[in-house]
Length: 292
Image (cartoon, rainbow, N blue to C red; front, side):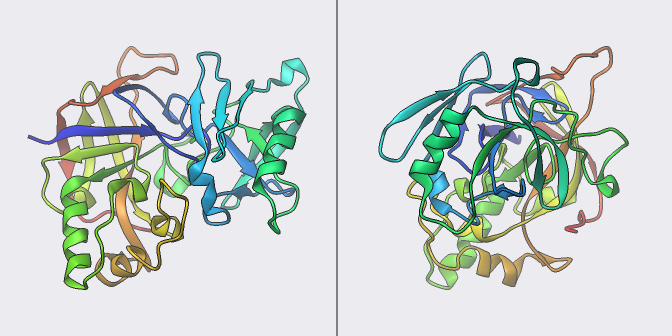
């Protein structure tokens, strides 16, 4: 019986994860997942693709949505969630060409990061907050009208399976390469008890009390080569091996993107709760999902 064995959120895009036992699911992702990001002057997201050391910044999320950020050196800062009604500066963010309304964090936070992230050639980096979770729409080719996403790369949630990780690590072992942990892929949901690569044919799945549409294979990038504990690039793996063995639609893939479905009679942003230990049931299977 497949079970949910891992549950993770990333309050700031590309920074360290929070390992959870349960989480509220909202239409745009797990509550508190990737509502903040660093950005260049143009608004373009700054991620581990640019600064792999972002993985070393530890994050806690307060009940009032404030961030508690701890730097690699151990100094900490509390950053209140900026609100337009309180005078926060409106701006625009950009994640892979999709632009959306955002607000800037307070000047103290901007200075704190500027002092710790240099030197780099990205310009004046700003910390942005997605105050309105309806501001950024999912690509229409994979979504229904009005469906939105947080500051994740493209979709509300990412699911991976331990069986596929084991198969990937077998490929790596055959080439005398070290195994990689699931954290390299920065999933929200980790499922145990499936067959390897089975999730690539999921079309609809239930996790505990909630259902999700599986819409797309997740194309992978250089972030998978970054150790999520040390923030160091570790060479070409596992991206090179994925490119050799799991390349579809010109993308090296690992994991599946999900969009939550709204339960009957639920009208607010909280759709329900997923918990580690929840049973996972595949409700519809089909051809391999597209990767692009």
